[in-house]
Length: 324
Image 1 (tube, rainbow, N blue to C red):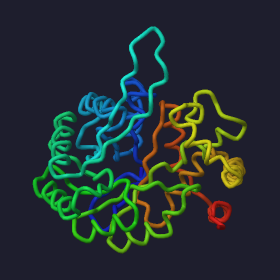
Image 2 (image 1 turned 30 degrees about the vertical axis):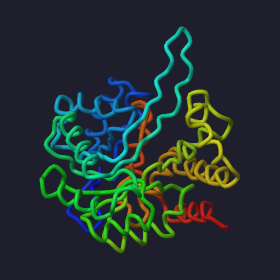
Image 3 (image 1 turned 60 degrees about the horizontal axis):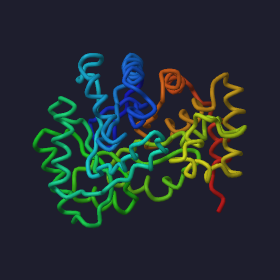
Image 4 (image 1 turned 90 degrees about the vertical axis):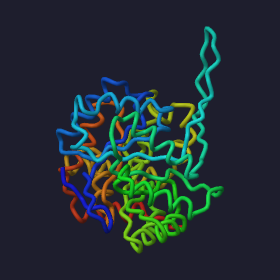
């Protein structure tokens, strides 16, 4: 798998990154192990996790797999701090209802960030994270305090490169102006192109590399919702149904139809075409993609070798462009 440089730094990552947010919920330890091995064998290096994923279960599963299946030194581990999960316990009884969505508490104070970093390192059994993100903007914490915390984390050797998640353009620009911010994660897909308006220019100005998240728009760009909502999809899950269904509009239909047409012509999948389009966008260092099982991951990895003709890329640009 091709490796790319992140922003104006020496950090190199695989241009497809492995997400772990389904680990511990929809993906069990055995499936996670299969994914990690397949990803590494394909040349993938960037593995993204968080102590907030699945209430901490995702990070614990990754900890079990590091070293035994894949060498820590072969991976670029990406973690974060600043967001802690608040899980509403399910009532005890013969009938267990669908659990409420996990809510998150934001705290990016020096105390909270470093405490979470130390716990992550201990849990993963590693001395450092290759990338450590501030996971959300916290208006209650002074910007200078966050900047000083990132500088300390890098100087201490516990963090190789600092980054941000969940920031908008002015927020990442403000922090990058006073702190060693190397990378920013942001949602970006054929259905989420607002990033191009202000976020990308801001990060480019500060030399911050971009890693795209949600490149398949919650699975919409795979084409799975063309003929309804599959029973095992996020659109059928009470916790995420509203998020998915409100995006299934006329524009989404046009984009998915274009992806299907392109995929048919290239003898591949709409998923691979959507990922190849993101991969080839200017300034994108990598994209974080999740898979529930090894079958889905195999489809994701197929995008690595897909060469998207310019005419198809241009057609996708046109059909996905915002008109309002």
